Image (cartoon, rainbow, N blue to C red):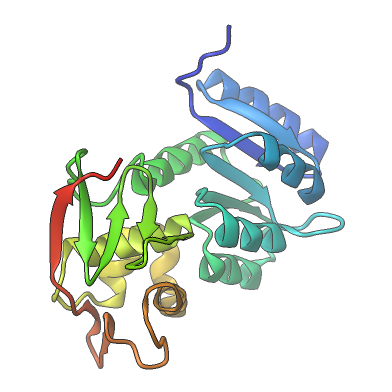
Length: 244
């Protein structure tokens, strides 16, 4: 019988000679791996399964990995790690900006990838920043965030979809209300690793989050810019019993 407690991964790469040996290695490390040779095949799988993390090649025939990552960010809160070639520095930056959680450069050491996977899972919710009580939600300015279900509820009761990076960014703000958080600190909390090299990545994610929770994202009242300092959540935050 399959191990229902094992972490499920979706590996999307058109290069069979890399994909199949890598899937076998990851399975030996205790993961359950589903393979897809294209973005189109991955979309079909995603309608049937809910992986806990996606490993995604950037350069593929047809729809590329950046496009599929954008789809995941807009529709699913699934952490994503890009598998990139050395010459794709610009694509790596774009990937971080649109919501990817990390990247590894081909050729890579499989043990390094496993370490990255576990790190991203710890940060993801499976690894929520800070110590979140399991029976408590965050409540702020009429909004409510369930950190276990990763569900954001608007003041009118509507559920608002957020990406895994937006989720971790919001948790960082909620755990430090009315405190100025500079870009380096936010990047460490949200993406870690070499993301600090790309300051605009955090600005992009803040802009995306503002579009989700602000009445007017061009005149933000909740997540305020502190010039020369970073960003601050200008709202009181309460911990309340978790919603059903």
